[in-house]
Image (cartoon, rainbow, N blue to C red; front, top):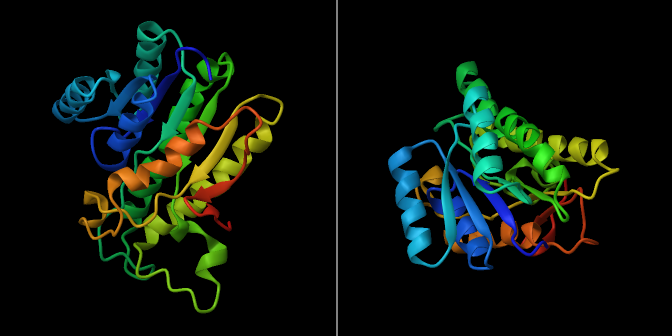
Length: 241
């Protein structure tokens, strides 16, 4: 990686996103803490700085064009560029959420954040990433979005909100398309699954800590230049699409 690596983590004010920021910051990287809520964002930045991370706040609503454009301008002006983008921000849309009962408006809201938000942020940051010596894009997905696992006899993925599950399948498909389009660049792009992590996204029902959940993103963000691209990974290795 470059001598002074700059990373943006979306949804970094709490949970897995915060731990991704903390883990990358511990490497000596400069970290943009992307978050909508100013108070939570400021608190996260202060906490990261107290721990020795060179962190700065990035007001960022991934569902808003103007907010994302302003975030790109802020990073360019404040940090001078971007090497790593971690698309972590996501919502579940609430429960219960079965295909036969889910409100279409909920599906739209989930896709707007979890998929379109990734497109919006990635495309806004792409000019800076293209200029980086070792650019990385990490899309935080989930194994619940794996069609292979969902259709394998004997594997029970549990009751997952239908819109959230579909959004992660959508995100995985999008990851592959970005890899294909940017195959002539040095940008490594991968999907990562944090596992069933205890966060407010699932009412803290997960069995893994946010720090454990952040490990795969940190791994994919720090891949060597000859590392994989276009893959779907968790701590154990490759996750089937």
